[in-house]
Length: 380
Image (cartoon, one colour):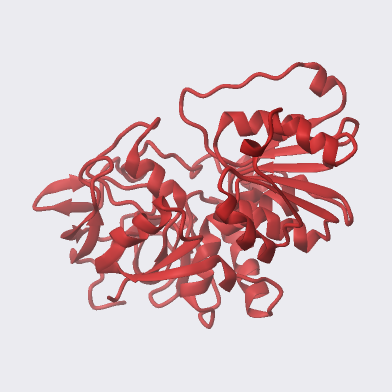
């Protein structure tokens, strides 16, 4: 047992008090874990676009004050009643979606959408009692995605924690707990391109680049990157992209441009923007007969799109995925081992590093499109 087990811990956290306003480093109280919960010490964070979106709260349900953060690595400080899989000192990756191991989805090889611990961006409390584990002078501070890793200590459901090799560098493998796994898995686990096939990836942010990396690993013959920001094209080459298309450079729909480039359409397309326009384009740019499009980006609450039913009748397939179809507790440890065995490249995703006290710099880098992943060092 740790010396702080069962006690309230006071620590630093970056609190979002209002939508779009700079995070404030505050001293908060973190309650002990309850049944099936674990309190962990966060050592490293990586800023994900989802943190930015829900901080801005444009098109989403605002919930403040809140502690954001969900792509991180840390160490178990104490465990609640009923937790037998983890012990203090274990290294873990928290995940925004969980794996209870008992529900129909967890027992299915086709799904990773746990019925109990499925990701929920609107819930700001713990499942156990509907309350927060964070307070500031008695005021509750809401959780985010069940993780809230922008705090030196946080409380997470045990089903949302993957125990990993303690030798793995947390400042590198933390990127596996969201964006990299989401994009890479969308290609490898869902789109499943065959060697030599063509793949179009819409959006060349971190998730899109991870989708490109997955296509490269699968042996795709052509990887076409689609983005409105031409500054991303040179970086994308590192992730296997062979050709680039900027929709602004053409006077016709980009799906028509891609169809002309590829003799009728690409074999696979992966959409990583959250734009419903890009979703339509990704689906309509795949080849009839065998083309598969995979939607990854998270749309706004009121978004919808339409496409002609003939696109389906002509044997195009449209799929969606959450977290690249990885089951977090089962699959993340394996991904970490692939990194340790040099079968998986993660370092090239990390472009910046800042101290926790300068966390707003990480948001600034992302808003300006300067970073792929910025690591936030929690001890500084």
